[in-house]
Image (cartoon, rainbow, N blue to C red):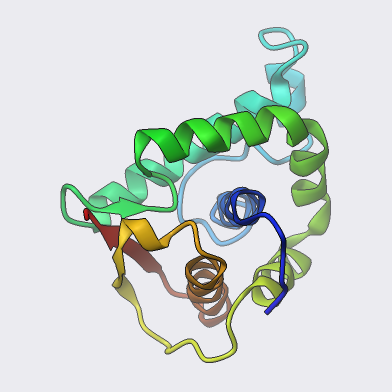
Amino acid sequence: MTMQSDPLSDLLKVRLLVGYLGEIDQFGWWKTSFYQSASQAFLAPIFPRTGHVAKYHGVAEAARLVHDESLSAGSYHLFRLPEELEHDLHTALAEAADQAIREVSLHGKDAAVEELRAMSEESISPLDGPISLGQISALRASHSIAQVAGIYADAFQRGNKAFPYFSRA
């Protein structure tokens, strides 16, 4: 597992990688193509300075809908977190947005999966569908973020869908 000093930036990175990998041109979990180079052409006139943030929010919303359909109401997941944590992620995105989003879309499919794998724990069980990871209060810990990264990396590599989630405290 890669040890990072800031769990919030790790969480943002996992969200960006999973968002990218879930798009139609990678693994097709949601029907968006925001991270494709052509998307800049239609975003630039509307969002001339914040197109990179618009990409992030577009993918996050598409991913949120797919996750919400697969999980029970009231559960938290990578794309639906408590309001305070969403706010912290938004702030972290604003500070590093352009660079972080460019790095994700430059990875390519295989490199992005490997990046998720590098952030993950070694012993992830090969589960599909909803996967409970306990209480949401654990999410700010690097261990929980590594679990989330590993579950998604395994699912993408196996060609199926897994939805790690947390329950309310």
